[in-house]
Length: 103
Image (spheres, rainbow, N blue to C red):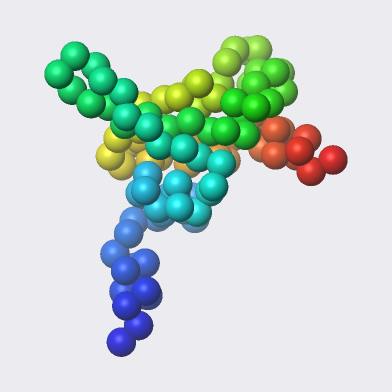
């Protein structure tokens, strides 16, 4: 039996990407995971290094000229956090920065 196929099929998908923060980070080397203390709780944060390095380009592409949350770090926990992260990766600001980097 192919264990990688069995493992892959057990992970839910969203817009063609795995609905798992850890899997997304392993697939995209420009994502960094960190932990932030919030009182007694520890929150998982993810930073998009691409949008962080090219924050002005991401802001221009955001439509409202505001900082893209993942450029400074955003809470990313559970499936809802993974969905937000995928939406960031597929979103206009991140795509604009990716396109600018290719030039």
